[in-house]
Image 1 (spheres, rainbow, N blue to C red):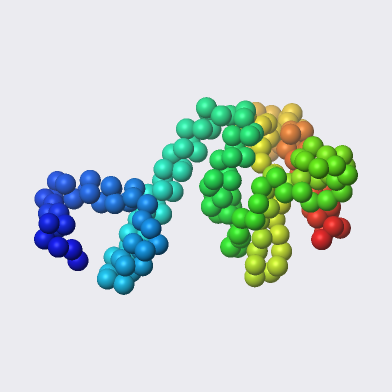
Image 2: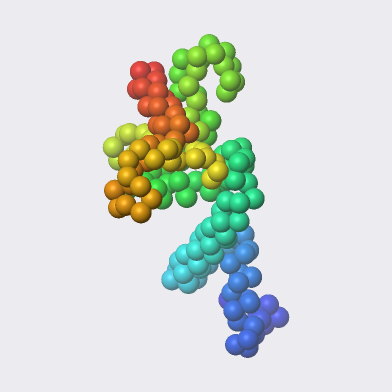
Length: 184
């Protein structure tokens, strides 16, 4: 709905580019409200398309960063803070991102590196069960497998120990959960 001078006619070649441009526009709440009022189905379709378009870009960024930032944990901390939906998707139930670098308890000094404290990389909550999830991230370069424990390269029963980076992260998570339960 617009005056004649505000109407743009597109031929079929220009249509996909126009839609792509629409997906990249950040609409105000007022714009969305008006669009919902005038064309609710179209507004829903546009919102879904915008979300899918953004998530595709997020996944492309993730893929390119696997190599470029393989050892930079601070990069991954910022990345997942900006894209919490990626971590939320790892859970079997709907969870909500609460915060990053979450102080859980026991600390006798301020800041992340205080004495005796426990800090989780991320904290999520499941509102329906009133439970929480602690997430510890590791970089893509973190080793997961340790030495071969049993079997040989060509055997189906080849077994490896967990690398100390993985087992250390598991122990760290258990400690964070214990501290959270005790403090909360």
